[in-house]
Image (cartoon, rainbow, N blue to C red; front, side, top):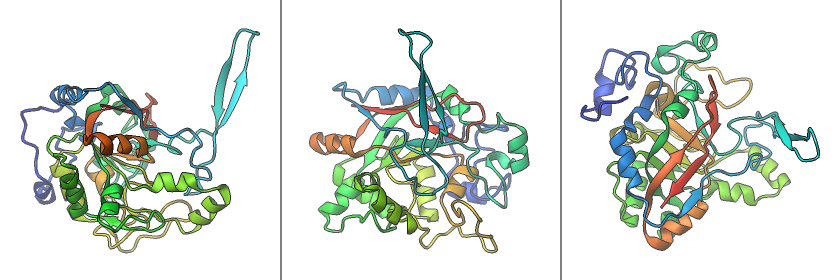
Length: 334
C-alpha cells in the first residue's frame, strides 16, 4: 500500500533518476511492485471519492460484450454465448472466443512492454510468460479501483468553441485542451484518481452499420491524447491512477508527431504498431492503468445538465490470474 504521507517524485525527477530507465517509476512504489499508479488510490482517496455521492445516480460505463464488432484492430473476434440446462428449472451458460479487451476494458501492466527496457519493473517477455502471476489484472482486482473520477468532456467543449472533434480524424488532444475543458466546466483537477476523456468516437462508431464499420477500420483514426512528453508529465504529476477514454486506444490514432518514436523498430506483421504510442511510457514505464472504449455519453449528458463533472468511480476488473486486460465493470456514482 502506498504511503499517503510520502512526497511522490515529479515526472522530471523520474526522467533524471538512475535506478531505472529515464521516466520510469519502477522503484517509486518499492521492489516487486505489482500495482503501478493504482498505488495512488489510498484509503483517504477512497473516502474522498465516496464523499462525492449526492444524488445516488448510477451510470454504467461499460458497453455490451460484442458491441464493437467488427473490432477495429481485426485481431479480436466476437464472443459466442452457449446456453444449457441440466433440468427444466435450470439455466447455465459459458463463453467461447471471449476477448477480454474487445469492449469497455482496462489494460493490465503485462499488456505492453518497451522494446528497450521490457515490461513494468524490467521484466522480459520471457519472464512474463514464465511467471503468469506477474503484472496480471488480478492485482488490481484484489486492490480495487475506487476513487474520485473526473470527466473532461473535450468533445462537448470543442463543439462549444466551434471546432468539434471529428471522430474520423486522429486529432491530438493536448494538455492545453484538457485544461481548457476543465476550466470551461469549472472542474478542479486536484485530487483526480480516475480521469475520463470523452472524444465522441465510440458513439460515432456504434452509429455505423457493419459495412461502414469495415470501411472505417481500413483507415482507422480517432481523436485522443497527444503522444507528447507533456501529456505524460501532466498525467503523472496530477497523480492520475487510471486514465480512460471512449475511443479505441485512449491516445490519438494514428500516431501524431510523437515524442516516443524509437528508431529502427520493425513494423509488426500482425496487430497494432505501438512505436510512438503512449502505451509504452504510460504502461511499461510508469505502470499507469489505461481504460479504452468506455461508455461516457450518458454520464456526459448528466454532467452537462447539472454542471458537476466529478463523482465516485468504482471499477472491478476480473480476478483473473495473469490476465493482460479485463472488462472494466465500471460505475460512476453521483
